[in-house]
Amino acid sequence: SSELTQDPAVSVALGQTVRITCQGDSLRSYYASWYQQKPGQAPVLVIYGKNNRPSGIPDRFSGSSSGNTASLTITGAQAEDEADYYCNSRDSTANHLVIFGGGTKLTVL
Amino acid sequence: EVQLVESGGGLVQPGGSLRLSCAASGFTVSPNYMSWVRQAPGKGLEWVSVIYSGGSTYYADSVKGRFTISRDNSKNTLYLQMNSLRAEDTAVYYCARDKEGYYGDYDYYYYYMDVWGKGTTVTVSS
Image (cartoon, rainbow over the protein chains, first blue to last red):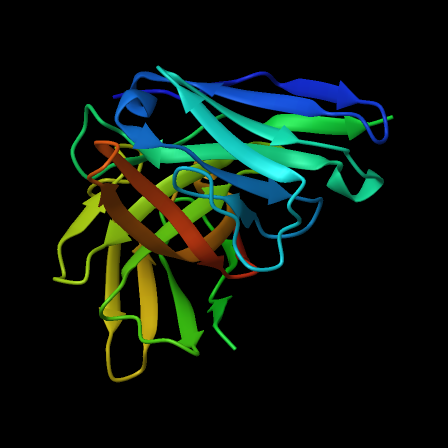
């Protein structure tokens, strides 16, 4: 089966731009989706498809993809963006299975 | 309002069984793909199982043969029957609505989970 690899932790100064990456072979055929999870809460979808935001997600969140790497960019990070972020896609090597990255803990300084 | 509410979690001994429920409101479960995702304490998200609109079911290797996903269309509810539970099954279990499609212009697929419940906690311990 495939894997999605994320950096365990990333930090950003308040108001600056941060990129969180996700690598995996599945991303050569699937756009990653991205989820934000705050402590004690359920995950929330923030980016899906080529670069789509669900209703209610601020436009400072954006997504991109190149080769086997997907990126979530937060432009002008806010204190409330401090959370764990997970990428997700199908497992392209194992029909019908779904995979998540290990998650990135974002700290806003 | 589109909503998912899980229930049925609790403390169970190793080798025991538990059935989780996920009641949907604001949309109909049966035409959708629906998944269970779990999160062990202090760990990341782990996909567990999916049921397709046509009724086909698929499982992560870690639960195959022990867990069964199903739905009751009359109750608009998703289920996860968990048997032969192990300590490593201890987690918060979330249900989610899945979406999948294909961008022909870009020759790329997409897969995402757009609605999540708040989760129910399963603890497997003696």
